[in-house]
Length: 467
Image (cartoon, rainbow, N blue to C red; front, side, top):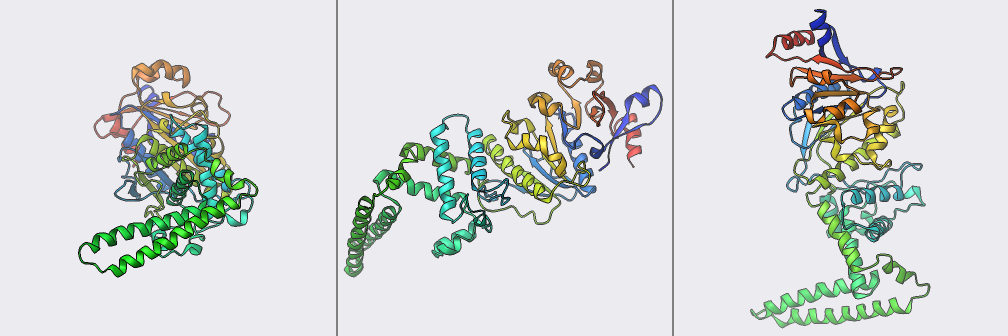
């Protein structure tokens, strides 16, 4: 990839020479990029220019767009995630790599994400309950941590699942990965078991009894309007039969307590309140549909723009990190690039500080450390550079400043090693500053660059060089 940024301001003003400044990630220590600029500095415009250059070079692109301003990337397909569209991502799809994937790895990843997206009221008991819910849901689908041969399943859409469930084709359902709906259904059954004190068999009998009672109530209502007594009598007989089955199920549950494991199966979820709070959290995080098993219709698009404006901050964090893990694991399976510096996949994060954390096992920190050799470039856009961890700031291949508020100049001079004069000469949409970190250079300076702009004479000169 070779992206023309503009002309060196120093050479143009001081020496009357036109020296192009280009971004070539393969020549830098890594393909990660930081793009910082306050509102009105042309951040969206420069972002699209960079992404266009990546697409033109044949690089795959995933853009996470929180303002719905980046769908102009050349040849891109945009998809809006909301309750209305119903598009999402099934978080229970497994990485089948026997060394890095499996049930435990995915469960731990989901629990960590939910904890991060839930800053309060999600303690150790809730974490344990969620972990047990996920593990047991996988087990019900025949997927077990100690059996990698069970990890491979097919993905299912929400509509396909509804049809299979409505037709009660349970054995067929086990051919697919479970979904969040399966987790919620299992959680509700566990809450019922904790409430009424039975096991799964007893709960099933109770549910059947409740369904027939509802039918009886409906029939009795219709009976008042001249419906025959025959249907009512039939339903009453069914209720008597199901009452017997429910009593038998509870008796079996009590009589078969041989090892105490049956009690442990209930006690490991701690209490109804804990399990209910976990269920409520799952439902809240998935309320916009981001965790629904309906993949967006990107097809074979090289550039995908994920429009996540309608999600809450917590939902954005959860969704983006699920997607990032999927991208990272896919590229890992493909292996390292031939050179170790080749860029083959760009992840673009708008308002990127939202997603960073201090956890070294956070997927973004893992990508920042390890993704270079797998051809991944993490491109991060932000209003200012202040929200990023120091490790990222000091190890990013390219840092681009489009205009930083003077309040943050001291921070920039200390953390980014840019001079105050360098900051003063930045002009929104006219002059940017860039630092290109090449191997063997301990502390390369920032370069001020005149960007293409039809409204200024120097900008037009820079534009002519791009043609």
